[in-house]
Image (cartoon, rainbow, N blue to C red; front, side, top):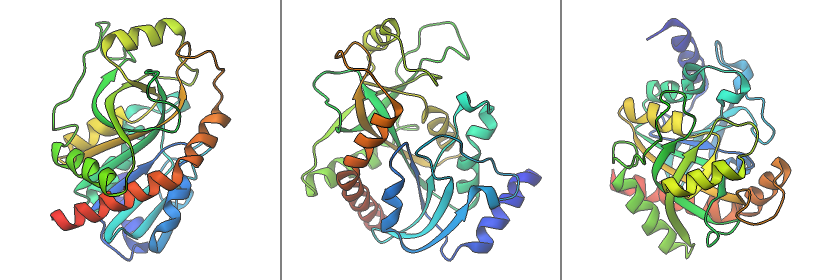
Length: 267
């Protein structure tokens, strides 16, 4: 293990009271979901040696370790993005950290724009595949990646069952990753729609890839906080994203807790 990562892991383990089996990454405006963790120990990013600090509004920048839904968890309240000027290794560092902590399952959440008119703001969407629309690695048009290595069929089934138990509408679809930080143009949204994308956001895909390559089971759920540009004629602001994510927080929190309960029962 690289020296810097070892320093980070040792620091977090020195403060933890549980050995987490499941990690949860919280997106913009979803940080309040960590309030339900039992026996929570909070470790601030700024205090972890060799660890970056989240700079985006709505991202608290802390790890919360404890129990949620009966499962031992580590919650990353705040993530890193390429548009913050960080490289891909730094953006995916949290995945290497949680793997070193012993995590087996990763639940990645995000706030995303809806490309489909039928999925209104406030909807929750289980991600069944992803598109890399950053064109960082190739000029070729991206295709949907839906391999179970990146989107665990078992965890998706648990999410469906949990949504049914909680009587929460959970749509499913493909998540398209763009670089940001500006919102997409009408031409970009048209392209994403034609490629099969149902939601668009500026994160998650690097984490999905890294977690899968490290051998962890991955589930991704998007909170659709707005319509993408030109789906409806409404301006998009980051403040609106945070407001809608917060309003959906109660449903999202219940869904997440039940998913964690189901994961615990399946292991």
